[in-house]
Image 1 (cartoon, one colour):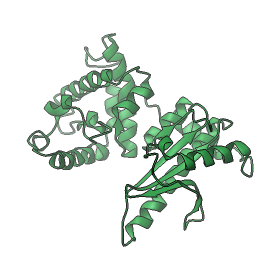
Image 2: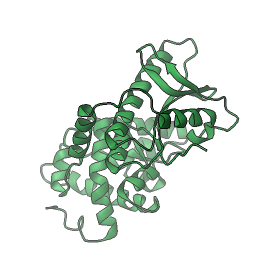
Image 3: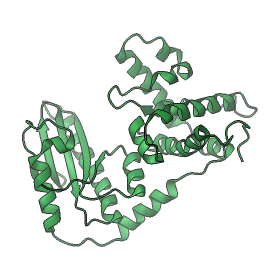
Length: 284
């Protein structure tokens, strides 16, 4: 039961905040920010605007907890700052009043980004988030991700490449616009080999860096989609390692492309690790 009376008052904003809090704590654990749009999709909002109001409610709750007995020596840091604008990489203006003086006084985007990195480091290092959730009467959702991960681990692969996977892979490689690149971008390289022995389904290389794409056809179940999320993590780690020893380092990004819909638990897993998903892609 929440010990802050106004926290759970039955309002829509309160309900959204209670859904968002465990997601933000999850992101703190995986050390990954989350965009406003991704948060809205995960909690079931039709638009991202309510995210800002709910984030403000979380910020007020954390401020109040900081002044409570037993919490003054372990005040919760700015958890709501993990929600960022996709274009700027920064939180919305509504959080400014809750941020550090360094962030508030920053004059340039670069200065704000530096201050935000400091704030995020404090969020990631804070060891009492489970106590905060207990105080506010919300439960962790990590068990769902643990169950899905175990399901992906236990499931047997189908062996070989099926026609649906091959068709989707070729379609994505030939159409960079599907993954957010200009249509004029060079086509993707299929089955690109990595030094780890893995093969990326599609790799796009260009002035903007490297984009590794894992594809899963509409026939894939949620266990196979979860494996796709973990495959993206491997691609990202290996490509970043390669970039770090390259004479011409490049930016690395990854994406999971689905031929069907994305199960909610798989979306949660992808968000936890910062893996963007494009779903419903049908080869034309």
